[in-house]
Amino acid sequence: MAADPYARIAEWYDLLLNPVLDGVRRAVADVCRAEGLLRVLDACCGTGRQCALLRGAGVACVGTDLSPAMLGAARSATRVARPCERDAVSRVGAPLRQRADGGGEAPPAAGLPQLSCRVPLLRADACMLPFADNAFDAVVLSLALHEMPEPAANAALAEALRVAPRVLLADYRLAERNLDLPAALFVHLPERLAGAEHYRNFRGFMARGGVEGLAHRAGLAVIRRERLFGGAGALLLAERNSRAG
Image (cartoon, rainbow, N blue to C red):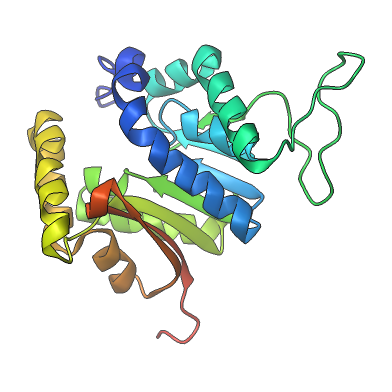
């Protein structure tokens, strides 16, 4: 079995990257809430912080990742996840409430799913998800596809669209205007520091048009688009275009 590329960084991943990534996670949660996506799979979930934020927003979330180290960090990250949940509750209302008798969570508000106390986390390859067709309302693929070789990224996207009718793709995009260029150039630094293979995959992803190029080649209909990272990234809510092909 191949070595876990995240074995060395899983323990400090949140400490280093939460200030940068939490804005993306909040945007994902806001879109899920606004669009009524209440059963979500976070594929390539990493340390589980996105799952915790979704849960705090009233979304029933399952997380999968191939990295044992990242899943280990997720399962032990209550000190990280709970503040993230509280932040979500303060933003969207309070779908999760403690019962007055201290006996756990009260029933959720009307229209929200019943949530368990823990987010289910499974070890799974995003290219071979262990779920039935249309098991979820949407699949989140956040800053994961640019790390993969093109065939793997295409396979992961196809699997996401098998288990859900919609996908939320948060990833890098090409600059559209001069104001986007500084941010677009800056993201090369952390991607280069992530290693030679990672940076090679990132450059290939960008050469093929970034996240919007990926969505276009897959024949997706983009329902909603949000800017990320000062224009260097985008969050796309998309579904298969029934008129394509």
